[in-house]
Image (cartoon, rainbow, N blue to C red; front, top):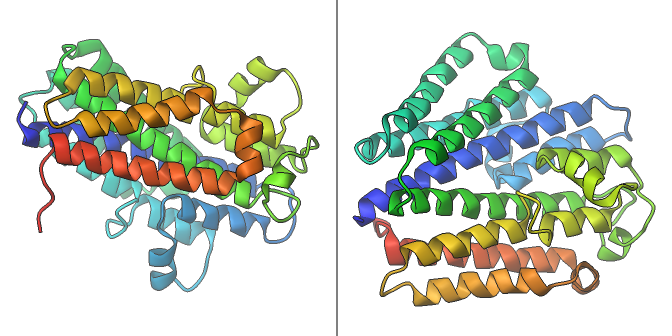
Length: 320
């Protein structure tokens, strides 16, 4: 496959997944802000959303106050913010348009319709009138895109590069959410010692984290008990049967890399395999004891290196 085509497919998937992840975080943060909570917790929740998307410095440079309206506008409709939903869906659509001949008609129509419908939603001010329904719409369109891809595309390199982009982006997002949420956990410092405490300081805090990755019902099914920080971390890091966990994402990345390997990709496959193996055989108590923030920071560095390796081995070299 031509590197330009692989590049467009890979980034189409990453930007679609990123838009969904932003919608998930904004939706959960908005719901949490309506609950009774200590002074300052709601503002921290909104700023945490900026932190997950690495947009905090840009937001602070362009806005004087941290309010729900300002952050929603910045994270949904601001084309100058590369992590906004409108920016992500625009880039996803443009990458899809560039490889329209490789995609099935249904996949292209799903991507194009999402972009056109988004324009109508923004013009009608649907976001301000009912932000919750808008975020559910973004998630639905992402689910629809993935379903159409799986249901209509031939099982060949095109599909595998799409899935590579999807699961690499998902792993990155899950790690960022965990890192930000555990640092701001109820009860104070956000240290791993506190994370081991069996008493949950704020049920709604951990429930919102689980809902942001569609993990609340899964947690109840797996553990059948109160929500504790240690089990939340275990579910989202080590449980390969949890679709958005780090372990599940890396299992998919390793599998897809094996299907597109070339003569230059040995080191990239080796890095992915090592990262997957570490997750497969790790224990959550060891991770928490050594420091969750340090662990997730290393993981994010390795995901960045893995993305760079995929870019070097398969995709279009970045312009200088």
